[in-house]
Amino acid sequence: KQEVTQIPAALSVPEGENLVLNCSFTDSAIYNLQWFRQDPGKGLTSLLLIQSSQREQTSGRLNASLDKSSGRSTLYIAASQPGDSATYLCAVRIIIQGAQKLVFGQGTRLTINP
Amino acid sequence: EAQVTQNPRYLITVTGKKLTVTCSQNMNHEYMSWYRQDPGLGLRQIYYSMNVEVTDKGDVPEGYKVSRKEKRNFPLILESPSPNQTSLYFCASSWTGGAYNSPLHFGNGTRLTVT
Image (cartoon, rainbow over all chains, first blue to last red; front, side, top):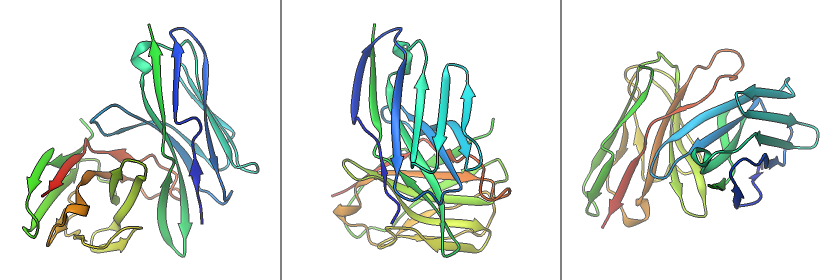
């Protein structure tokens, strides 16, 4: 059974720092991995999607990497800002017996202190 | 603007009173899905649909029904809500082309309380 883990559950850093969020998954047979941001009381906003054949994706100050063989992904945030404070979730898309599923981690709650 | 729209945003109801949460997307996506989010349990898939008239169970389908009569709409129906269905619900959609390699777009959520 595919399991997705995000450690740490919460992270607090000063503004301006570069930081890395971690996501690990137990089964490397994935179609893609997606990073989301969730603000309190709001829906999930897609940040980056990495296809299984890719190693990384970049968008602005965000860079996501994928190492399928080791079951790991990282989200790198450069020059963090207070507006980056949110919960970050990763999810892997898998196919089980023809059924498409997304398996989510429980998220890392990030606080950027001014 | 491309979006997934859920209604209502907040709903308080009593045990046993049937309710429907609507979900509509304007991106012509084939794939739509419902999730519930609970503290300590994360996001869990309830039902999903690969296209019109094609639906399937997710991980936690008990107590829920869905229908997909039109491509843009995917309502979630609770025939007889119970307090354990109190949760934050999300609808999402995406393309299904390209071997499932398309990002998932989420609605803003529906916070349901069943008393």
